[in-house]
Length: 377
Image (cartoon, rainbow, N blue to C red; front, side):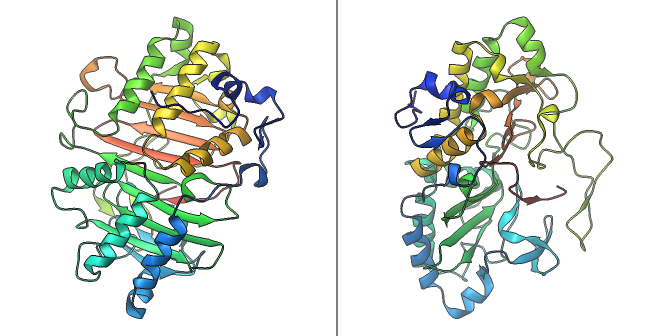
């Protein structure tokens, strides 16, 4: 298994970070200052985004380049329209959307620009994972990469803030350069995959993310009965179902009334609202397993993004500030291999929803003041 060691901190020290004031130059023990979680720049992101930006014609820039905090009206499944009364477009997240109308595989972009987009993706993902993300897209829409993907660039080269957001079906991801940031991944991100169909088969064959839930369930099986009872949620899990009625004038989707949180609402919650078993109440060996789970969750991403998560996690009090929850609802195959689970801390949400197919919603920051927008949340 991949090592997830903080610089100069072994795994046990990291787990106990709430008892330390400073370790390896990182502020811990609940510090929530932006300085404590100053994030390193993803390797090559500045050069890659700049090269793409400079390749764009004036016409292209008018269509896909935005000011850092430019606002837009986003209608789920329909359109994005510049609108000063809308949401900050850079902060928006969805499991499926086109941030601009021009698909990467279309005539709007040249073949050279499509290669530059690949270069941008390589600054986000670890070795081998760009191919996996492309495979995910092709599995899910049964069409080549670029048919349902789009991009937007926020800021300008030579600024201290520059971000390229790439979206599509089951994708919101960001390559970013932001010296002021206290958020990991450049902001909230989302993934999904359904290689065996909308209702995936038991065990999720071929799913590029399923290994993460295999690891999470190993942790559950290592809990004693009391811990399992605290970790397992028998009520409704965060999940939404569409009724097919889209309000085309606002960002809201008309849905049946639910008395449960919806998966895309990944705003940070107070401790009393976070579900599951506190990791602080686990044994040291169990905590070490959660530490290894974090390493598995971070495998898809570049080293710099992994480092950002470590910094943000340390700033909010370390793993002991988090809880781990599993959901009994929608257990595919009724095999007690929990398809749906959530890791949550003061400013961390990592929600893996495996029913009816995989969605992953991720939001990690150094403190809970970071804003975002998502459909209906």
